[in-house]
Image 1 (cartoon, rainbow, N blue to C red):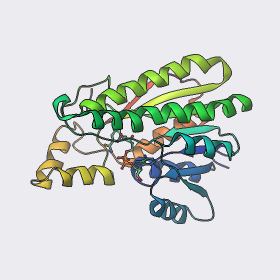
Image 2: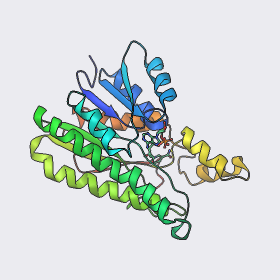
Image 3: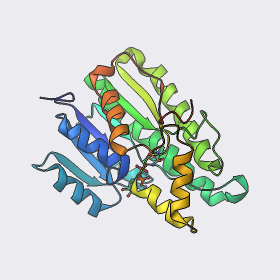
Length: 249
Ligand code: NAD
C-alpha cells in the first residue's frame, strides 16, 4: 500500500537530479515505476538503490521519436507520466545560434509532445491519468538573464500542459506543469563548473537571490510531483505549480 499504490508511472531523465528523486519517491509510495534515461549506468544505480525490483528501467533518448513509440507500444498503459527531461542552454539571444535553439526545443518541448501523445491513448482507455510536465520559474513566470532559449521552451511547456488539460479534463486525464526555482542537482553543479571562475562565488550568487537563503533539494520537488501524480491532487489540472523558495514572490 502507499499513496500511488497500483499505479504505473513513467519518468524521463530519471537517472539523476529531480527525475531520480521522483522515481525513488514514487516507488516508495507503491507505484510501479518505469524509469528512463540516456545514461544506463545511472539507471542501474537507481534500480539498485530502490532495491527489490521496485523500479524497472529502460534506455530512452527523449529526442528519438521512434524509440518513444517502440517503448510505449511494448508496455502496458501508464496511469502517470512525469516528463522531467530538460536541457539548459546558457546565454542571451545573441549567444543562441540555430543549433542551440533547435536543441532546446527538441529536448524541452518536442520530446514532451511525443511522450504525451504516446501515453494519452492508454490513459483514456483506462479512464484517466495524470501528466506532470517539468517547466521552470524561468519561463512565462519570470525573465531570467542568460536563459533565453531555456525560458522560451519552458514557457512553451506551460502552454502545452494547459492545452492538454483543457482537451482531456472531462475524460479523467489531468495535466499540470511544475515550475521549480534553483534546485541543487548534479547538472547544476556541472553548469557551475563549466562557467569557470570561482565556483564558490557562483554558488553564492545562486543562494543570494533566494529569500530562504538556500537552494531547493530534488526531494522537495519530488514531493510536489508525487502529489500531482497521486489521486490526492484530483481537483487540480492545467495549473502552474511554482516551487521556488519564494524566489518569484
Ligand atoms: P538534469 O538536467 O541533469 O537531468 C537529469 C538526467 O537527464 C540525467 O541523468 C541525464 O542523463 C538525463 N538526460 C539528458 N538528456 C536526456 C535525453 N535526451 N533523454 C533522456 N534523458 C536525458 O537534472 P535536473 O537538474 O534535475 O533537471 C531535471 C529537469 O528539471 C529539467 O527539465 C530541468 O530543466 C528542470 N529544472 C531544473 C532546475 C534546477 O535548478 N536543477 C530548476 C528548474 C527546472
